[in-house]
Length: 197
Image (cartoon, rainbow, N blue to C red; front, side, top):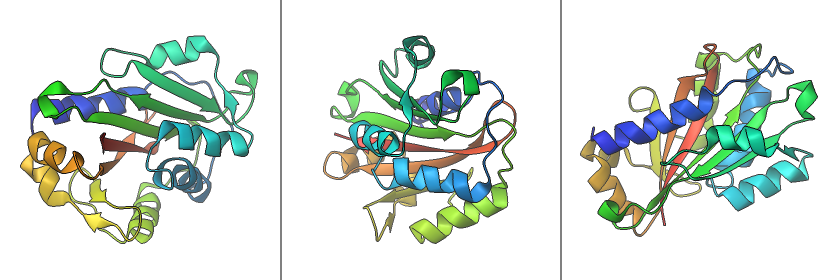
């Protein structure tokens, strides 16, 4: 993998590792429903994802919480909370990179639903829900790389070809990488990276 792809995955991991207080626990199924509605069904588009979350009563986060997410690789960020801050809710985290000049101007958008640290998320069950939704098996890490909005097309070969191959394809059609990674307390979580215009 190229250094740039490693940096993108590291950015998603950093988003999932941001500090969080004890939250209302989620089941694997409830957690995946949030990921599906806010990230997969919207293609990780920040405007669509925030609208979907707000339609379900999720609230804008305080600016200080948003500022914890912002960094040079992700200068644009949005955070929505499933309840009031003092209730330590689940978080929807959305970031957008600057256009990557060396990759034809494509951007990387990240969409993460951060579950509560005490959530009962089962990694095997979560993987099974992802594979049933996408109709695709995980490639490596585990990562699902695909294009389309259903039916999905497996794009593992682009991931294996590196950032240049993914960026070339993303110039005409977004490429998605759904990563299953642990949060800072080891709870399994999903992060959707969208590479495209």
